[in-house]
Length: 54
Image (cartoon, rainbow, N blue to C red; front, side, top):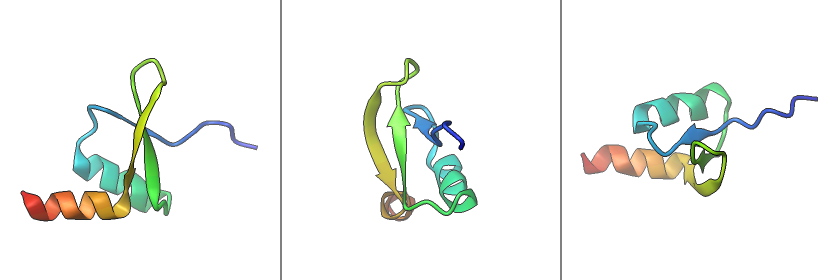
């Protein structure tokens, strides 16, 4: 069993988040601080919506 959680940091840009979501077929990815505290989640829809706001 794999115990490593696929996550992103608060500094990860949206294109990298999108690539991670696509690579692992995720619907959402947790956002962690450098000391591994959960600060939120980013969903696939969040990434798409952010792309259209730019």
